[in-house]
Every structure is written in C-alpha cells, then in structure tokens.
Image 1: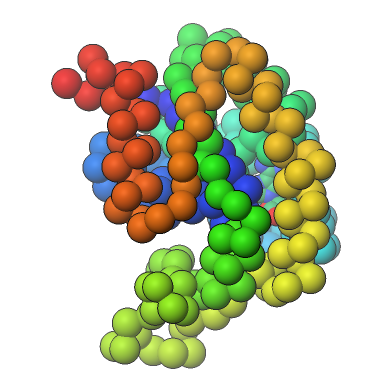
Image 2: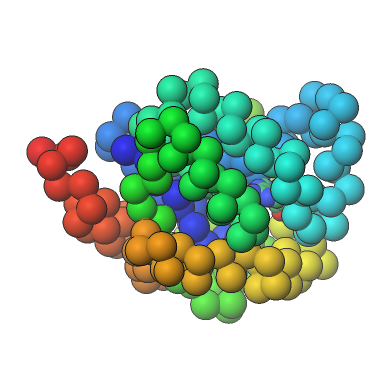
Length: 216
Ligand code: AMP
C-alpha cells in the first residue's frame, strides 16, 4: 500500500498516519520529521534548510525529494504513508515518476479538509513530547500528568507568525497539488474536522474503497 496523506499544516496528517501505521503496519515517511532530525543533528542539510523551516517556508524541492526518495527506497517502495510530501506540483510529478519507475505506483491521496479557524486553533495549542514525538492539544488532548513537563515543548514553527506564513505558503504552493491529484484520479477528499476517532473512521472508509482486496 502506498498512500499520501495530504492537507494543510494542522490538518492531522501526523496523527492519522500513526493510526494507520498501528492498524496496518505501514511505515510513516514524514518529510517534516526527517527535516527536523537533520536540523537537530546540525548536519549540512539541516543547516541549509533551518531558516526556511523557521520562517514557515518550504525547503527547496530537490532537497526534500532526495530525502523522500531515499526513505521510500529503504522501504522497498511499498507499505508506506507519505506525510507532508509532496507539497508542490513539481514534487508531485517527481513522486509519480519515481514510483512508476519502480513499478510501485501511488495508490491514493487522502486529503484532509479542515477550515482555517480549526487549523489555527490546533497549531497554536499543539505541544509535542520532544522525546517520543507524541502530539497533544492543550484543551482536547492535554499531556498526561505523569509526563515530565520539561519534555513538553511547542514547535518553533507553531509560533503565531510562523503559522501565518505556513498557511500562506500552503495556499500558494501546496493547495494546487490537490488539483493535480484530482486530475490524475487519485484524490480522496475527506472531512478532517471532529474527533480523532471520527476522522480515522473516515480515513479507513477511504482506504477500504481503493484497496478492498489488499485489506481482505
Ligand atoms: P511538517 O512537520 O510536515 O509541518 O513540516 C515542517 C516544515 O518542514 C515545513 O513547514 C517545511 O518548511 C518543511 N517541509 C516538510 N515537508 C516538506 C516538503 N515536502 N517540501 C518542502 N518543505 C517541506
């Protein structure tokens, strides 16, 4: 199974990817996580991209493509969910070409539809456990009392000025990718608002529609 989870920042791509991973044993390839790891390591790549990320801008296409392609190759081009890739039409074209070349075409793009108000609420209240990567919402899913509070941090790019820039970047560069996937017949839009479990039921409905045989 080869899936893309698509949507604006804060759409819930990471949360839903992890649930799909648990359910089907798929691996999650998150370009955002790969990029943050490179920044934290202080690698050459990390140094090159750090400013883009903190300013809420996209990292250059070719750098992200190399990261994503390497990760897909490590997973033998199958049984993965892409979270946060592709984010430009150029990346989308490269992705389709790359997977077609390995006779492992992309099967579906599940697009989480979420309004701007909900996105801003989710991102401004999002906190992360910097050791486990677990994600919380201060009101709806607060960090458990037994977790050391010093481990709970806010992502730098969840600060209000970065959120604004990320939403603008999404509208300008990433939203058109949805149209691209619609034209090639892979887009499966679902309502991304409501409880995590409700959204997951819709995601499952969508997965089952395109791969009934594989899941049987
Ligand atoms: P995310 O964790 O998916 O929200 O990604 C965090 C940041 O990493 C984004 O705001 C971008 O700066 C960068 N990034 C992640 N994926 C991509 C991508 N496919 N193309 C360009 N930049 C990306």
